[in-house]
Amino acid sequence: MKTNDFSCPKWSLNLFLKHFFMQISKVFLLEILLIPLLINSLGLSGQNNYHLQISAESLHSNAEHLPFWLTANQQAIYTTSHHTQQLLLIDGSYRFKNVFHSPLSIETGALLTGSRTNSIDLNAYELYAKMFLWGWKLEGGWFAEPDFFGGLSSTNGNLDRSNNARPYPRIRFGTDDFIPFLFWKDWFSFKAEYDEGWLNDQRYVTGTRLHHKSLYGRVSFPNQSVFTIGLNHYVMWGGVSPGLGPLPDEFQDYLIYITGSTGNDRFPVTDQFNVAGNQFGSYHLQYDLPLGNATLSFFINHLFEDHSGMELKNISDNLYGLYADFGKAHLIEAVMYEFMYTKHQGGDKHVQGSTGLDNYYNHGVYQSGYSYQGMMMVSPLFNPVNMVDGMIRGITNNRIVMHHLGWKGQLLPVLSWEGKLTFSQNFGTYSKPFDPQRNQFSGLLGLHYSSVKFPLDLSISLATDQGQHLEKRSGFRIGISKTF
Image (cartoon, rainbow, N blue to C red; front, top):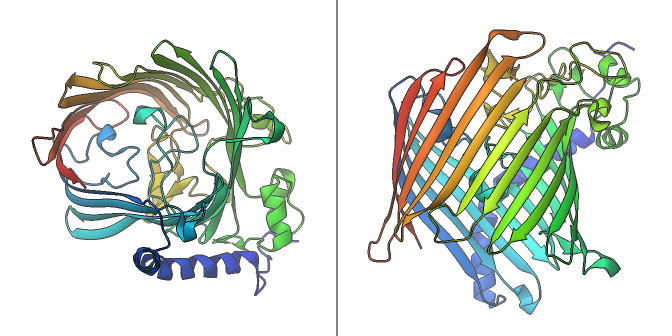
């Protein structure tokens, strides 16, 4: 069977999900407006809480683009293609507790922006609704991942799950956090997620679906230390390829994708020798130790692209992190060090059915890689992207050695500060190496003023990039905000 002879059944799972997400996009804003009115008018909620922050910001650079740490890990709110930007942001959420006088809670939220660069753009970066019941949750729409490690990590503590790109539409069912497990609730808890998303941007394989699931287990010891082990698994599936046509998307194909199985004769030839779709993920190990009034956390995040990675044949490629939390009202409230190494990739030669040339976050069929709306969805250090005819065709740099330091604290009761310093050695890819390697330093220093005697919060951030990988540039961001 030729690889371009795939049929796309009328009632395929792919078409069903496409129709489903299109309907969600039409009704979500209406739901978010009507749910509060309905619940309040019927008196069906208990004690509620809400959050609303309105901000105005201005960003400037002395070069063609804004510095790295002014734009990275910010849900793609800030431009990466201009040297200046003005923004108005409205970030709000409302949570209704004890709906129908029950344990059910409902939350709705949105992050809206008005941005001016060469033109004025209005965007909704987050638009979601969530339901919470007995420690479980169902959420849908466009929503970001929660921040870990005080926002000091280079990649949110996970190589394949950052907030570097704009949120994509998805439905997720899982636990709200770690919940006790059966009879071992005093010492063992777990966290799980299962979600389906739609990458509806301009990309090489149009209509790509993104499946994700995760499972984490946590053991609590008598000395109050905690050990966590977890697995994240992703697979891109379905869609229409320019060269291969519609890709398999029936329910039996979906089962092959999500179980990480080898494709049958309905799949492209490469999927018949490896695994179906674009599979990747990570293992996560973490140990948290209380030390007096502080907490020390150490973690290892190991990425994989195939079975060889899952079998640790690329064992040297990891993100290591050490995080110390000293509590509030200290000069240094929290500090983080991370080391990332991704040069090995199973070796510099590919052995069929074994290992080698893993080429992280690139793929032969899904050539836009793990990206969305022009930004990589993984660590922002995996850059730059390769643009062809206005769309991403993979990344040009995934063999990296990185050292990262982040901190935050209080200089004065009304003045807080934060900083990030990142040094990386960039080697390109195995197929197109950088010669010589490109060394890069990126730094940021931010100050934030907040006082009950002054109605607005003020902030300023200074950032710079120096090296051979990114253009040499410096810039700043100033902002004012009001939280209600």
